[in-house]
Length: 229
Image 1 (cartoon, one colour):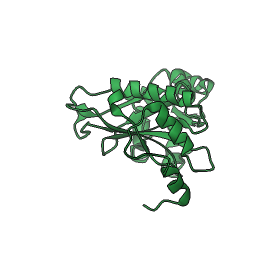
Image 2 (cartoon, rainbow, N blue to C red; image 1 turned 45 degrees about the horizontal axis):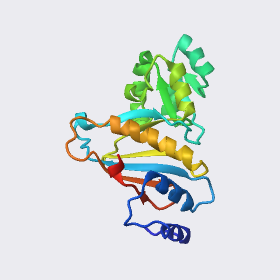
Image 3 (cartoon, rainbow, N blue to C red; image 1 turned 120 degrees about the vertical axis):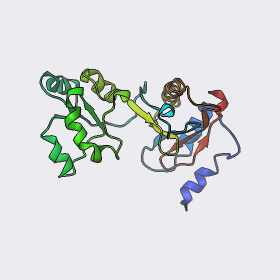
Image 4 (cartoon, rainbow, N blue to C red; image 1 turned 180 degrees about the vertical axis):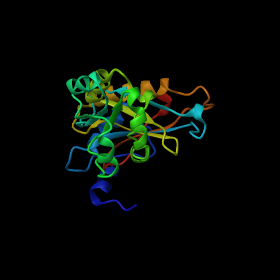
């Protein structure tokens, strides 16, 4: 992959042979972010899990204390009193059966997170082929299948993010923006790492965290010292 001049300049700031402490890595990622827009700061965690085994899967959610810096649009599938509850909590869209053709046929996907009450999962299940590949399917482990729609919507709006293993057993998550203070990014990063260390499946033998890389959207990766975790 060929990188531009800005990336090459930014990459010179990072010593590829060094494993950095989180505080140094955060400062470096901010300094090396080459784009003109407010880049997202991302964490990529390579694990020792084998996701082909159900007992080694990792999936959960954590509320970042300082949010993600992104405005998140929430769609809630609900009926009865739960519709008003979701609207009062600040959901951007609330509905039921009538939204199925809009999503399936019209390709409407103007939302970032989908929440559903358990009694609506029969309806939402019909959207599996559309929502599944985009990682938008509600899931009890992520707290997005729940009767407590108020808490679900408020948590998401406050900066709740979902983490899960991809096909190569890596977890990719945003922890804020380059414009955040170092302290805010450090707090978000610590909250994420605490959650992931606790989520370690007991079936995983050997080293759980193989590598941790911090990067901005367009910047070079900065490797962390995993021994700290």
